[in-house]
Image 1 (tube, rainbow, N blue to C red):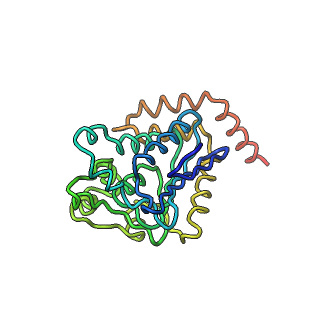
Image 2: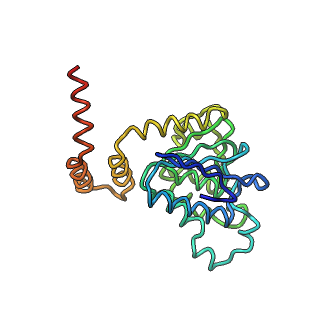
Image 3: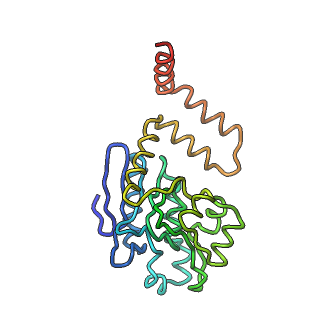
Length: 245
């Protein structure tokens, strides 16, 4: 998979994507949006785990302001970033963001769209969009509320509060704070743990967990599919055999 704003490494069970626009602190521009859509297409066609990180000690310091300056109403209604981040959130298998340094504006919203976030001690999350005369319209206004609660979300979105790594960990936005040199390694260890689970079980668990409202029937239908799967029987047979030895 060729890209100019990303480094993409395709492995058997995962894809590792590194945002790489060093001259712009990995700001998300139109080219990066297009290349991330290409990653999504590949993961929808052949589901694998996804690891997202940034190059050079920054995750993504926002969207490209030069491009945003030239966008008007029609571009806003296209949801250029929000459609991408929603697509990432709906990928079949789990996604992990390894955040070192700034994750601001669109960069924060990209991290919010992932299932799990790990952070270095230097990580900073924030949504300064109102200071530029716009709002955080690519998911932060509702994803951040779901992740950290309405009060903290409004502090970030309305009052410009930035969450450092300790705040983000305490509030549950990130799962763990890891030294920068170990961040990607720890993210791979997390993906390794996920990869040991049944792929169909992971996919259906993510679908049920993300389903709005939740309903017992949804759980029952997903479980019915899994109960009839060959993988369920082979995994339980292996568990029972191990328990008898």
